[in-house]
Length: 408
Image (cartoon, rainbow, N blue to C red; front, side):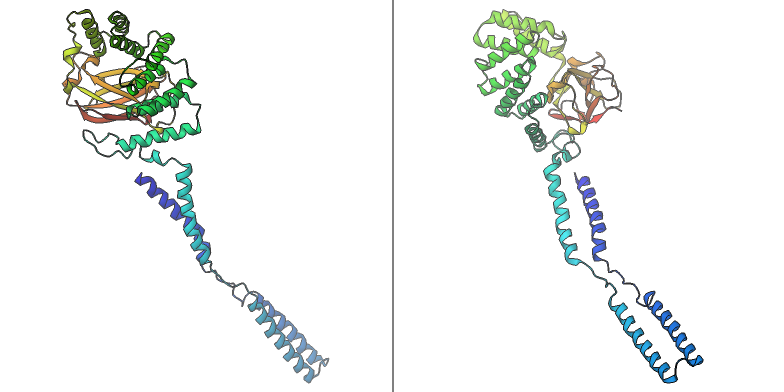
């Protein structure tokens, strides 16, 4: 932000110098001795020669010759004085210059603050140092980003994807009432998106003291009607049935959810534990359960910065992964989501490792990257949107990743 204002100040100063210089410099009037006065002298000499010729030929008497010479001299003096008096005089305009100096820079700054995007100045390049990582965004910066998005949606109220992003942003800030209003608007514009209704149900439950009864359950049922495999809808439906005391219905949702999840994921392990508790059997031991401890994970939030240059499509694939700090490009842990879920809270741990010999728990520090791919390919492609931060210590929580660039 400081660099921007320094450049702006330099441009304003250069512009004012160009505008004020003609007003303040003292213009030099033309020398009255040339060429006007020289022309008068030439005419005087020609007429004087004619008088002398008339005197020699006897056409003009000496007395008349003397009178004519005196008359010619007087005319020359009068015309020469008139020429000098009629010359344009050099003038400056200090009052106009002062008025321009007071109004032009102020008007330029006010116009930028009204029509420009001052919040974007510190979104990705003015991150203050905070506990855990110097790349984390402050709460005020996140609030600024969210408020800027809300302002844009007031001008473009038909942007369903923008309303969904605003709703998730409010949820991340725990502004549940604002999130509910934004989700309602997004669903009004895109009523057939199951994930929106599941997220809306979750926010309504937060406003309802954590209970899924009533309006939250209505949204859950509509979400599963639109997409029976909606993961969040299944999880919320199972929780609602367990809350109601209907273990059989809850187990049905959990079993369905468990079949859709990767077998080695932490979520699958938790669902299996819920099923075991509902059946009254011991929870199955899984490799994922002991592998990921508090010190072997990184958590945080992925956001989309306006510096990314374009908005992704809702169906684009979002990859979030951890890389070794030594520069290797082999990910240590990866999660795959959709761009419409941004802003996304994430957790990377050993359960998401691509190889058993390369895990987060074997590293002291990692580089975190988030990438949006239109093709859905795991390998980076030209044009993919990307953001990165780090190195951060394994075990850090609340890391912020701003997607603010493009893969060349």
